[in-house]
Length: 182
Ligand code: B4P
Image (cartoon, rainbow, N blue to C red; front, side, top):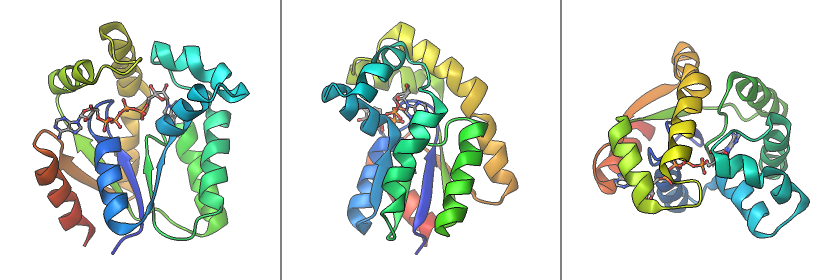
């Protein structure tokens, strides 16, 4: 069973949802950079104050800040882990590759959750988180296409990419992921 996984896909594709299901079933660490950043905002920490407006606008938080969070959490972990929402640009890809080399835990699979924009927008509007309004979703999708989508080709070229049809019910998607992990 593969133990070092990454979920890639547009906002609302279900990265967080599927990563939570899989990490629970396997007792893996679920490292969601979005979730960790939202926690900092809720606790009103210095970091939370720095990122609040950026996140509410749907823009990406500074690479160095996110890297510190990832490092802090992965360093202490030697069981399986799932990265959700990180990396999101090519600079974060390089930082992650350095971190993983240092801890000697190479990435084994990148699941790309493939889904149409119309379904995403509908899902996010239904969820209604602070950053789930029409304007912010438009910004998030634009940034995704410009800066995150190129990561698909990168991980494909490393033969790590597995395509998942993310437009379906939760269980069907989870079963496809499980089957590809074996
Ligand atoms: P994230 O927290 O990563 O949020 P996301 O991409 O919008 O959501 P995800 O794809 O996980 O969708 P989910 O499962 O929740 O990022 C938020 C913000 O944090 C970013 O905009 C950025 O500002 C900042 N950030 C995070 N990481 C960063 C980084 N590395 N660098 C810089 N900034 C960073 O699903 C969405 C909804 O769909 C849910 O309501 C869910 O219940 C529903 N859903 C899921 N699967 C479904 C299905 N199969 N059918 C129907 N509904 C489904």
